[in-house]
Image 1 (tube, rainbow, N blue to C red):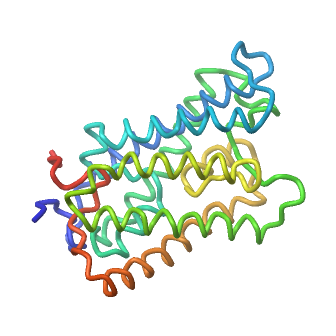
Image 2: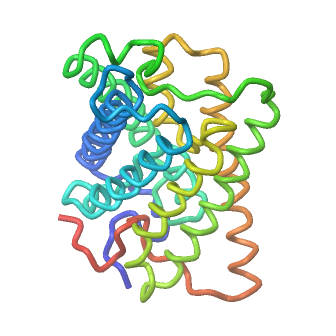
Length: 261
């Protein structure tokens, strides 16, 4: 049995310091993404990659490694290492995260998104805002309509939620969850990046889109992953009842055996 304070979806809110950890993690994540895009997509950079797909492949690999490091870091072990409002909502709906902490976590993640982008702009200057980089904001390819973007983002989040629920349901296996999430996100970036943008994380798009003034489709990137999280959590409960898997024990993506303090 886990001693996580949020295990089994208790009503007692987590300490606000946990949301503070989410802020720090998301800030570092977005700063790193902005940094990577600045160097990979700026034509004046020494490591510029002109073709989009190879650039996305490199970015996907860097993002995967970064996610594993952040989830397993001390702040990630403490807060759970979500860095994604849709993940926070998913684990709440899977009854392993206190509902009273959803709003503080989501607010911290969105604030961290904006802060990370702002720090990236301060660190790297004008190239971050250039047309080629646009603060690392993502968008659909020409000819891809809003419905396709919504379905792609929502569908991928359903799969990601079921994946998270599976590993959280088996304590002996959830040590692999950070790696599996990282691989899944990398695959989404490579698969959907050239088509819909491949975000599946409202916090990943929020800060970049706001700074870039790219807000027309922002509502899709904010809501589609949430809808996917809701549907994925519902599917998780159906699978739980059907296959009688173990009750999930923790909302921590690094696993319940890692101390929270």
